[in-house]
Amino acid sequence: MDSSKDQAAQLSAEQRERAVGSVVAAAAGDALGAPYEFQSPVADSEDIDMIGGGVLDWQPSEWTDDTAMSIVVLEAAASTPTGHDLRVESAQDQICREWYGWSLGTPDIGMLTSTVVRRAADTARADGHYAPRAADFRTAAQAAHEELPRNAGNGSLMRTHAAVLPYLLSPEGDAVGGIDAVCRLTHVHPDTTDACLLWGLAVRHAILTGEINVRRGLHRLEEDRRRLWLERIEEAELSAPVAFRRNGWVVGAFQAAWAAITRIRPLPAGKFAQRAALRQAIESAVRAGYDTDTVACITGALTGAALGVKAVPTEWRRELFGWPGYGTQELIGLAERVITATGADEGR
Image (cartoon, rainbow, N blue to C red; front, side, top):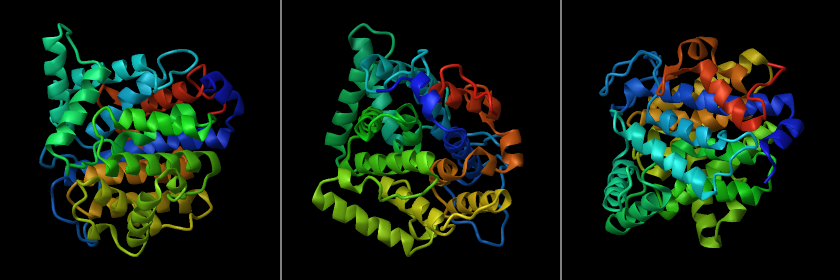
């Protein structure tokens, strides 16, 4: 894998802007959707804003578990001067240790993820460890899947954009491995691993080219799975996000987000048109109701990857914040640490 120093030398300024845009737009979608989570669809006549409140009583402009778990992945990827390969066991151990610490104080964690974290922690304590390791997480994830084989939640899809950032100029196979390794720490159902692969490679492609193509990773799937996912993608392109009300299911979340993005394609040119398009896509995702923070987060991740950080509305960037005490500038700095050796783009 290329080091982050090598990536910094090769990524263009526009590509770096898009990489940062994926992270910031994902967090913005997360915070925008937070107050509307677990509620019915929102009518077009009603405004959508980062008002806070909701079932979990979020502060205005505060992100949720979607961004918190992604930050942990990014911190692991930025943990050494040359970049950290997320396929390495020590990187995954760091992720799992930090997820466990975060889980002890969060009001918001997905059901399947919570089950995996709890079981992994029990295993670690039985083995005399103060915190679970990646091996404990993987064992717990597999056991949870065997007990609930139809449970394919969206808790890994919400963080897959973070898993691709270390691999922007590495071979695509390296990115596939990183995506899969991070996904399988908590989710092993084929629907979740496929969804993370497709969305993650679409984010990577958007960062590198400025184009949105969710079919980019279909060739990586087995033929029967490829046909199934093509049908799901085509169904989303003919529907509105609100049509996919089972959006806590990873496939429903994927389809709702892709339906929201399809409505702004082809992507417009010009700063103001792009900002309006990103806002429209993320707000459309929130209006679908139910798991609003996650659907809006993954919508933002892919849209921001194509349009860049400057397409995220200024008022959203100004107020955005969340665990672990970060604001937008800290989030930008973290993303830049993953893609550059110095942690800052001198051209910004």
